[in-house]
Each structure stands twice: as structure tokens, then as C-alpha cells.
Length: 507
Image (cartoon, rainbow, N blue to C red; front, side):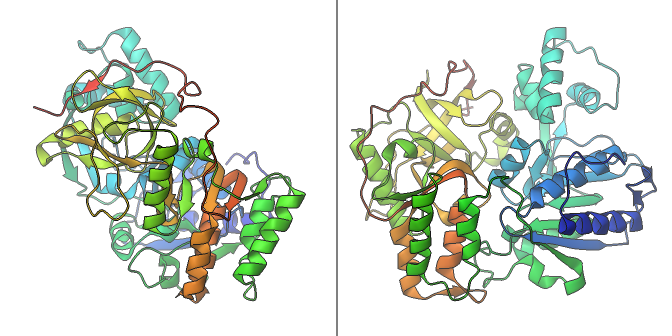
């Protein structure tokens, strides 16, 4: 095995050795690159836990690299090559699309648990292209694709390791190459799960059914899944099967954000003391801001994090009000968050068109204007390889004290969106932004309620998750006020022009 180009801490090195030992026990020798056939009746589970900055993702990426170099084949939810008896396989998973996207942005080819449970069936003609992209076959000659289109597909695949994305880059729609969907009939091999603290019992059981070997990476200080009584999957594992990382690695310069997050572990720390710590850090370091108001300019690209849903809705409506957004339409530059794909079962093939271009649940999107057809929107999908797209859209604007959202416009079916100027802390798990505004009055309200989760005050878990969503600058907003915008909403920072693609879901 090649030596990773990183320096492990003592606890990371110990965890890496433990993983190497586990892999050797299931027939994958990372040191010598020797693979033996899978023994399906043997099951091994290892949990790797650690707080923000402890190097969990760094370790996961190093393990993926070592497994690849040993000859283990990575499979994804969008395509799986023909089964070979001697093949050893690996899947890198996350509970949500948002969490998987964070890994992919760091160069780790992750997919969601759901996409591993349900896999697409490819048209035989385009399956030849998929096999070529995966390195299992010679370059094919396809009547529907020119040499230039194949080269675009190859370049896309080498960058993102996504077969649907590569075929989309070649100019195809999902309905051209996906003929149906099926639930996985056979188990896989090795599964690495990031953000495993978000797993619920059903997902954990599904994973154990599919993977004889599981490695779970997660942060026990985050919020437990809803309706799990504060319990996480790590609580189900015997003590020897869980390793904890302690040392902080994320930022070479001492991070005031991580100092704030880790201070929450002090059982004697009250909310007032915590806020005094933030105020002190703000005086010492400009990476922490003691905010007297919500900075409305930041809301256009980075949502305010809140606890209460009512707060989220009020902030969204205040954002639209200060920009003078009319009730019946969206302004160019307004942020949206994809809330899922509203398609009947007969259109499941078309879902891949949206997902291949980044329109997955939880994806951040910026509205660019109406499309050519009624109900269509021109959109910029943040973080996507080809971000400009025009798609059938159902946009929902929630209003204070109203049960039903206001829908300024909608196609009959397509991608559904909520406004993205604010989001709950629970839904922010698995995501990260450069600058994050946390609405402190909501955290204070949770502290006043005195609720606990898994023996820890709920406000501390909320604050920990919210603070650690910031990669560079944290704004701790202490008053329910909005700043005035510095100018009208703009899309100048996005660049490019909208793609001519129309995703029609009316047939």
C-alpha cells in the first residue's frame, strides 16, 4: 500500500491500524495489495467517532485511497458493473444527499444509502459506454454519440465518477439510457458510512443486510435522528467495536470556531457563559462575529440557521420583504433549496436527469428567472459541474401563521423547492458553508426550555451542530433584526448563462 500523503495523529494512526487489521480479517490485505474472495457469512462492524475537526473525513479518504490501491472496486448508486466472482467492492455512503455532496466536493465518490438500495437498469447500448467509463471494456462505437460526446463523457467521469453525469455531459437524458429501477437483490461487500450519527434504526438494519463489512464514521455530539430518543447507532455497538478520535486537525491555525464548539463539552458551561465566550472570541479574532442583526446580503448564498420552524419562516419573509420581492413571483437571485422530486412512478427514469445535474433533495439553488414554458425555472445549482439548468419547478413560499405555503408558480410535476434564506439546524446537518449565521435567540429559547437529549442539554447539541457548519467565519446573531441590503439581488457572482436544457415532465 502506498503511504498516504498526510501525517496521522497517534489516534488516527491507531484507528488506521485497526481498520487495516479488520480488512485483513475479511480478505483485503492493504499492506500487500492482496485480495481473496468475499466470505458473505462473516460480518464485521467498526465505528469511528470524533467531534468536529478530529480528522474523521481525512481518515475516511485515506482508507478509500488504500482500498482502491489494493484493487477494491468502488461501486455507486448510479451504475454497477457486471458482477465478477473474484471482485471485491466498496461503497462510500451518507444518509442524505447533502452529506454525500460534501464528501464528493472533497474528492470522495460518495452516494446515498437509498441509491444503493435501488439501482437503475441501463439500456444495453449505453451500458457499453458505462462499462468503458468504469474501465471494464474497450471504447465503444455508439451511433447516438459522436467521438466528441464520448470524450466529454470521459472527462466528466474522470472528474466526478458519475455515469449518469457523464452521459448527461455527452448530451443524453436519463430517459435515453435508464430503462427502469430495481431493488438490490444481492449483497455488496465493504461499506464506509460518513455522518453515521444521522442513521436511524431502519437504515442501519438495511446496511447490515447489504454489507458484510461496515465502517461507520460519525460525530456523537451532533443531533440524533428524529424519534430515536437521542440514541445513535454507535450506542448499539459493543465498546470494543467503537474507536474515538480526539485530536483536532481541521485547520492548521488554531480555529476559534472549533474552540467554541468544543467548549460545549464542559458540563458546567451555561448558556450565558457560552455567549460570553463567543463575545470574547469575537474581540480576539475576526473569524467570529458578534452580530447585532442578521446580515441580509449573506442570506442569498448562506442560509441563517435556526431551531424553530416559525423563526425560519419569519426570516424568509423578512428577507423577501427587504428586497421588495412581489408575492406572486420570485426575484432573480433568490436562494432556493430543493425539497425533492414530485414525479409519479412512471417518471422514475426522468428523476436521473435532475439528480445527474445536481437537483437532489437538499441542494442549494439560485433562481435565475422563468423558463420558456409556464412553470419552468432557469436555475443555478450551487456546486454542480454544469450548474445552469432549466427545469419544471414547484416553488413553495411558506407564510407566517398559515398552514399551506403560497405557490407563486408551479409546473404540474417536477422539482419542488422551498425558500433557502433560512434553514433549521436539524436540516443543516451534513452541510457546510464558508460563512454561517446562527440565530442565537432560538438557541436561548431551547436553553430556557431545559430539554435534554441523550443526557446533554438540547441547546448544546443545537449550538454544536450550528457552529460547526461554518468553515471560515461564524456570525452569532443576538438580535432579531435584519440589515439593509447593500444592493439589489444579483447573480453576477455565479457567472455563465443558463443552459438551453428543458426538463419536460408533462407527458
